[in-house]
Image (cartoon, rainbow, N blue to C red; front, side, top):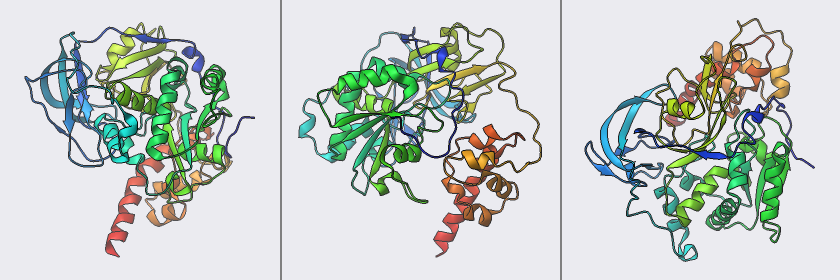
Length: 441
């Protein structure tokens, strides 16, 4: 029986564009762009300068701060410049530009860990940090921090739900790198000192469920859990509820209820960090949408401009109305194709008119669809009103910080109200106000 949670909605997944497409390697590009900051946490500083020669797997930027993850070069070549360049949030940020020489010289410090069992937990976490591991499902939170909770973990959950429409990169990872994924899970189990792990996979990926079950058929410490296809099934709190039955209370994190959720691609890259010694320098990216001539899944070296990836997918059938990095529900619309692929770039979606067009907002008709479908059991219609009125007290009472910004409120609203945008843009004001209150106590 497929497990799930209350709320949410089965949305058209459009995965048929690429779910049967094996991962393709692409020809290397000439210039690679590495934004210095690709994680949530302390900012990094470049540790190279223009004119330096760098190699595959060499650090380009780092900091001594704990809450950070370094950035590495995915190619060998010369640092052409360090200058502001646009990122996937539409902002110009400090970026290291490397001119690829095509030699693929690997940095001397890249080497596998010979004896993982001999490492202490602190040493295991350092390997993960040094490899630049962050939440590759899109969260961007440093993995070494996440895997060092203050509370003991009973449930390790590997997120293979991939509930966002169009995206199939995790699906292909589970199919094409099954042994490596299982080995990566065991490394995470060792770091957390847990005895059991649960891999949650939606039943629209039956081939992945079959292959994963075959890989663990002789062991009982890793369990493959079928999940009902529903958005946002892959959100942490929803995944924990579906698999363990536990609720993560308001103001708490998964570790507070003994649970930990790690994305499948993050787990795979943990395997690579230990077994190959290679930091995060590449990932599978889905290039899809009805504006793309030849949608597919591509093994991409980080730093390549997204314009190059669309070229590898045959270009556009006609000029797209909208281009999104990430999924259509939680991704970021782009106004430039100069944006480089970064650690959290799971997909590129190019859409034609009219499925991506915005309709004019109308007054709320009190239908309640946003409330019924909210996976966090919030009242988005009232939160939207608080956001529009900049009413911090009302937003706090309505638990605005519990909003996971899944976008179902806007998606289901017959009046086409921009609830997600209003709520998400107001949340920083509420957070700032709460911090001021706490500092004043």
